[in-house]
Length: 135
Image (tube, rainbow, N blue to C red):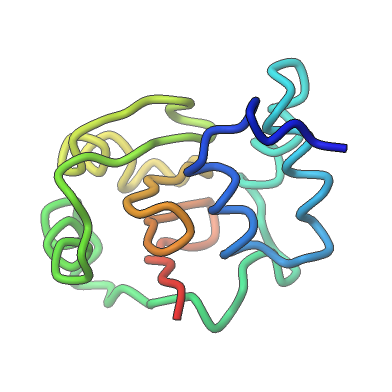
């Protein structure tokens, strides 16, 4: 059983909303345990194989894949000034959205900027750079 009090709401809701159900339990347990977060981080770096819920993916045009334009698009979708960042590049930080994206975009590190828990996030890995939006 997972102690949901040990999880950040952004992290828990990200897993439940945007990742395939088969991985929920394993990832929630990993995120709740500081010694096992690396299990989650490794999978973020190379998500492949249906890791993300396809219906939640909002593609970003190649010409718009810079921090400033991604921030603009996220704000149009309702993102607040700040987001929760977690993953390989930065882990467990509340940041201004623009600053977080400047630190993440282009590094292909497997990191998430969660704007609205379980509703809106930015995700970048070695393979993808996408906005995730719950319908």
